[in-house]
Amino acid sequence: MAGTIILTGANGSLGIHAAEQLLKAHPELVTIFTVRNAAESDANTESLRKVIARYPGSRASIHQVDHANLSAIHEFASKISSAITAGEYPPIKSIICNAAYWNLVADSELTEDGYDKTLQVSHIAHVALLLRLIGNFADSGRIVLLSSIGHYRKPNAMTSHLPEIPGNIDQLNHPLPDKDKQGRGFQRYANSKLVATTWMYALDHYLQQNPRFKNITVVAINPGGLGDSRVFTTNTPRSTKLTQRLILKPFMWVINRLVDPTFRSSADAGVDVAELAVGKARPGERGYFTLLNKDESDPITRDPELQQKVWQKSLEWAKITKDNTALKEAFE
Figure 1 (cartoon, rainbow, N blue to C red):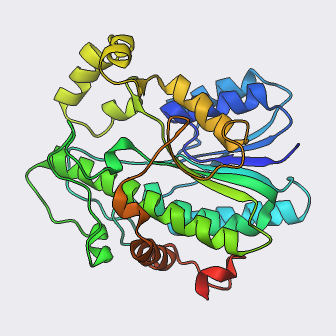
Figure 2: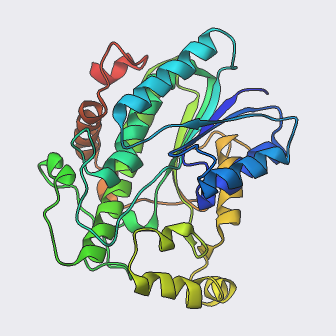
């Protein structure tokens, strides 16, 4: 069935493969791809354009939307909503929340909105986008949030600092400086995934309370460790770049088979995310997945009180009110 799919961060390593899978396997869909920089000088966006060019019959478009600017998110949402209302686009079938950010070589950066950049790009902006556009969904559809193995509160190779949601959640937007730039930078990234995964459960709850939206399923997927991801070359120390070049990429297959079965390529992850979005994979299911396998997220994400706390604070951060979302249950 025809419908509109919005994919954020579409020129990223996973995003560009998800985009191609949508264009190749689901040509009946209208695909809206958002990127931070749509200029011809941006090499990543030019790669996305080349992918689109391979499918000349597609109804694909690229939109510049900076997740570090909430005004840009709200403006984009208004534009898409108006276009759907006017019949220029069919109702939304899926929104894939793929855009993300990290910085492992500096302390927390604040956006113009006053939020930690990692948290805003990876979570707050998506809250605004989803809740502004929820009224433009078809009778059934799917929301896909990108989680990570990093959201689990256990040690990992990237940092000794575990992710956490403090009692005063606003502290997430004001992390203190620390000499351990990589460790704290990854913790901020993990925090954003922990918050987004917790928020997913609250969103699913409110959608099911509304007869109009009860057939929209929400999932959060850990796509696996992506050994060829460009993220390892962006805002990372030299040691991380060397590790990817000398170990992660050349031995990806070996690591997958002998060490970690969730360690794989961005191409494989992109296909899974696209098929999850259109409902071909795991149709009608909700909740947390590792790859395409139903899984359990960190225990604290399943705490109803914390879910509600994260939900309320996310509405505030994203500037969502009764007047700009169709999900009125969120305020009752």
